[in-house]
Length: 269
Ligand code: FAD
Ligand code: A2P
Image (spheres, rainbow, N blue to C red):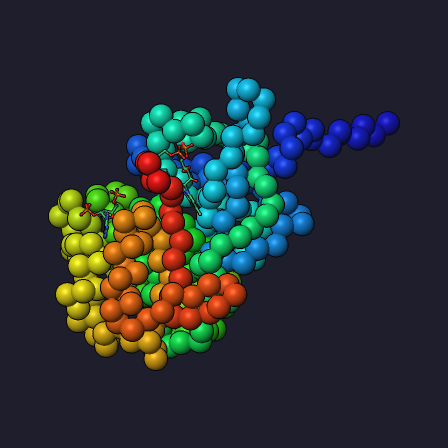
């Protein structure tokens, strides 16, 4: 007699199963989970994910989906906050564990929120790379733009590694490798450790160094579009610089030349 194995019991509401976990530094890790069959999202959007709290209530936080919309799993790139209510626990997840994922994607870092342009700039610090890890793997990015520039700044070299490996892997990606070709320019910088490119995104934009290094004209509203994701201070400073170049902030309902999203909600904000 054939025994039919019982379907796995999902113990949490909106439960998804962790498939892989990779620790990059003592402050950063990435992980992949199963994708709800019904979940549709636009590359660049975020969802609420979390774990069941000790009080029996879900402990949820906003997370950018770092995988592209076509991927059969979902990937996340996470900070480890030592005393953080969620990440002090989330950093210990293992394959086979379950997390909670509310399947309601939202966000402003989406292609629909920008008017057509020639070049697209992704400007990020820290885990602000996550939405761009999704968008760099999205075919629409390469269909819509001639050039894509990924500027990512961290304090230390090791904090760039997730992004570096991802960019490196794109060339050989069977699905989008050919589309990426030489359209994607990667400009990682460090601010507190010796590296071949140094300095804050803001300084490299305002001094014109990044334009000189990449042989590109200064950003202008006719050709350039930008998406920004970092701390609140970073977002405010980048916004002022982009506006100085003549770009205007857009939204889903009002596409313009750049869009901004917080990578996290800071202390006291
Ligand atoms: P919290 O109580 O949430 O945070 C404690 C403190 O840690 C904060 O006050 C802040 O100072 C610091 N902090 C929180 N998150 C970060 C971070 N990512 N980088 C640096 N410092 C931080 N976090 C991710 O790791 N990956 C993501 O893809 C991501 N996407 C987000 C998208 C949006 C729209 C927003 C608003 C936040 C996002 N966050 C992301 C932050 C995330 O929601 C949580 O704040 C984070 O997981 C820490 O949760 P916690 O409960 O451990 O600590
Ligand atoms: P710096 O080392 O000069 O402070 P953090 O870990 O504090 O979130 O910073 C991540 C990266 O973002 C660091 O390289 C940091 O540079 C940079 N950064 C922090 N604040 C800003 C800002 N307001 N404008 C530009 N870059 C910033």
